[in-house]
Length: 418
Image 1: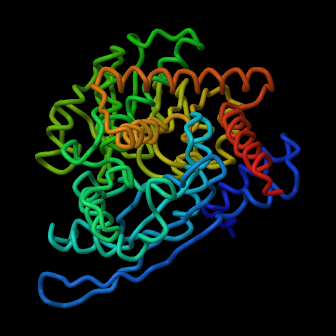
Image 2: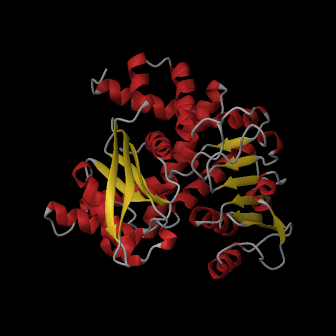
């Protein structure tokens, strides 16, 4: 009988445990970091368009706030679980720490299928979620953001509801990822992808790879994956030879135009059947001979079973948790350079931090300034992790964890929690 794979949160805990041993963490600090500080499960009654009332289940996990307010997105997904939310909240803690922004980690979610809901129903659900948790969030407590199947409009509704409950006209710093007209930041739409591309550029420099001569495969052609493909093609000159989504993938050895593929997906709701391209499965895409592989979709897609077949030189983990702990070991042993997820995809929360700062100061930056600051943060974080990796002779993931956990542990100790 096959051994049951660890849950996402168990994987997150195991990753922490390994680093705790390397750092010789005090038992008290290790115990604090293994569990969320606070969890909420709420019931959200929503009147649907047909007049019926449905009750949705929502979550908010506040993992750790030793370095600053909790920070993390809100997901609307039909298969959402508290385990997933816990894991993502933990990774947000390390993500904020590794790029050295003054936030802790949190995450939220609602079990629903937004694809089957009208705009009015989504608005009532969004406001209902804030009604259930508003006393525990805010600009200096817990700052949500968009995530899977949520967007700037939903953030706008949530900000409006929170502001009403607090008795103020507008509190833009309580949430990020808002529309520009409501205090959002320029440069937020592609921040996750752009931040990832900045780390890929640094990895290529380290490995002596000419990006203009590289081939790239992207698994997951949503917002992060499509923007990454476009930026890699247009900024770095890389050739995008394969992309996929939940329905399947496409492949062309001569290269794909990522903007044309995106337009095709917008029109047909999938990348499949794109002209002048062969079909390829998601599993086959992962094992293609490419220079750079960007898993930008789901968690646990690279495991100990397929990791030995990965032929990419660089794996840039734009998704959350796309590699299992066992796969990380195999990839490192095989010489695959992995940019771990909570470093590679930290561009989104970094620009969320910029948005929060702009809202607090009521002074907004132009897009060039946002890009400049993002490049500075991501490049600095990458170089710190690389130096730790080379110094300790450990994987980039272990090095990123070492830096992040050490920073949170130091804050816990200085605050006198142990």
